[in-house]
Image 1 (tube, protein in one colour):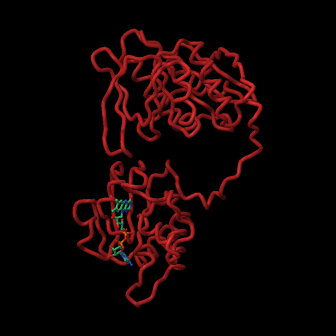
Image 2: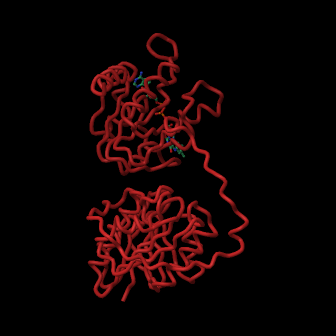
Image 3: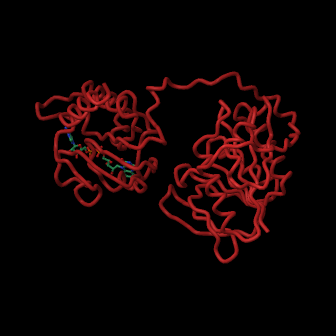
Length: 346
Ligand SMILES: Cc1cc2nc3c(=O)[nH]c(=O)nc-3n(C[C@H](O)[C@H](O)[C@H](O)COP(=O)(O)OP(=O)(O)OC[C@H]3O[C@@H](n4cnc5c(N)ncnc54)[C@H](O)[C@@H]3O)c2cc1C
């Protein structure tokens, strides 16, 4: 009989991140499909009551919480101690948690404390025969495996964006408080504050509906024999501001910075999509001034609706990589698109 333990942490404002609701939905479905199992929800944060109330109707048999100022910030020692105490208190056998940066760096270590096992990049949970089975990705999401394990507890980190978010009524949940023995090591690390880029400088937005990809063409000589990098920067920035799309890039464009060439100032290697970059999950993608070569488009594996603007009618996008290819000058197209978006917005 499995105890399915959905382990969540709150955001700093006390709310639950979207990834937490997705994980809860997956845990609930698994519990419904598995004979004799029990669903328990665990919460970590400064005050976990309002988060528990938010998911009160999820069908969990019990809610347990580790709450207090010690759990305000992500910190290995306190987060691991809280996760360990909660898992012990409910005798968890399958621990399901969202793969947020906070849980991703802590839970494999917590699994070691139990002599359990941990799997990351989980994108599916099901019952195979009478056992829990998962789908997970390996090798930068290029190979998918379906697997089960007999070792318990089994810690599963569910990839954000891979599950529909749980939706249900809020209510009043009775949260059982679990005491956490904080090790002395906790005192060694003090979180003094957060430094983060201004909202507009943050161009990677995993929850955006649209991935907007920029390619090296934006920095190449155009029909007039000149480059137009400042104009490209403005067109791209305006589009991102108007749509709140997430910004991706080809490798060639982000690499140009390392060669000292004129590049778009707000791009880094973190924006790179592809074989040696990331494989984000957005419902739609629009590629501009990018050739659509295989090492790039392999990063579009999870983008369902794909469009591209390129001057080259024989580019990779034309060879089955995009649903629609506009053979056109992206400078002209994006200028007009921005005008239409601004009109609509204002
Ligand atoms: C081992 C390996 C791993 C790699 N990993 C990655 C990876 O992870 N991600 C990745 O992106 N690449 C990767 N690459 C590189 C990849 O093969 C391509 O070289 C790269 O994606 C090309 O980038 P690009 O399309 O932006 O540039 P280019 O090939 O220079 O293409 C620019 C395009 O812009 C178009 N263009 C120019 N001006 C305009 C305009 N005004 N309007 C419209 N279109 C215009 C041109 O027609 C052209 O099609 C990898 C390569 C190798 C060998």
